[in-house]
Length: 143
Length: 409
Image 1 (cartoon, rainbow over the protein chains, first blue to last red):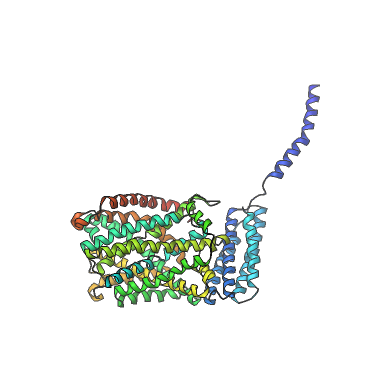
Image 2: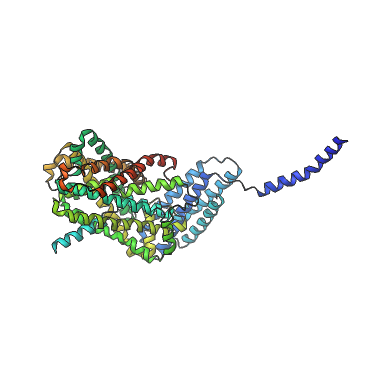
């Protein structure tokens, strides 16, 4: 009799346990990407924002073309370093793999925009801004 | 009138000559990362360099001999050699960073480089040391270095929120997401940049070059206690400009080309021209000083004939030592090493070497055999000892912080 009662109580606890598990998993934070990748996103963001600022100043006549060229060359090197390091990074799980892929894509776009800025393309600043916004979102995603 | 002119010139050159590549880079890096929350380190560092440069200059003016020469005689060859090793190696590292700074400044002006500018920088430094009189060399570099005042002008043109800028300066413990280890790593680096050993040895040997006597002690004090703090305000302005423009955009300073962004943002091409001239003059002047300091330290330790007041043929080993140091510094850079990374390392290792540099100066400044009545008083000694404690803490903490914080990353 008591065993039947206990079994009945056990079955009754299952929906409660499921509810608890669902609640806990729902409240749990999404898995964070590797801090090394987040750090690379910060470096890429810094280079892209610098290039954006320098390109804007050059286009406004506030910066010498030679100085802007030196800045863009430096930032191209910085972002190329980020791309190389991210390319060598071995993702530990699906979250890292997805983050890394997005970082590589945004960094590649930033590098293309920097090349365009060096060539004097008038749309380069806007392209840099878009790449910087994506990198900023990635950086925030990493906390 | 001539006297007033000499004092004014001394102050101006002290201001213009205060900032070097270490100050430029470290203050910009820190400003872009922490705002003004490490400004207290600059203030402590500037007060420290004033205290010890004054002692060093006084030793030279009263005894007629450079500090290094007396250290070897007073403390013996072993302590002298420890002092020599530490100072010379840091000097060489700083010289390497300064040559890199010249090349980077020329790159900003020309748009190409910096590798191709390194031989130009070495030749330029050598020819000036070989041909130009000491006073002209020092005054021209110092006066052109005053162009860096454009950082102060830029700060006002940027119209920052002075309240929040001031608040960040008086709330040094607000770290946010930053690691405290990185914060302290940069504190030590800033301290090392402000108290770079070569400045003291150059000041002392320069006093001998210019034949200072007791009569010049007043000028020496004005140069140090007015010129150096005003030079320190340039360091703070560099950090503040970075805090206003770079910090909100999450830009971390890794190159010299990023340091000029706030200035061109504020004042356009004219301000940019001033800042490029200022950086070139500051790094070129510091390269001259570090090259001379390398020659001074070696010559004064080994008892060679030295000084720019002598014809090169009369101080051959002194000049040869300087040429070798220039070639070694340039050679290191030609391997492709990043000048900014060399600069960051040089300021941290400066902090490590500080006790070996400053302790002997305190000892000599207390010796009545050399100083007569001009020995340190109680206040100076109290401050000197307090600073030695700070220096020792910074020196001990520097390498562990460098490793644990991953160079502040």
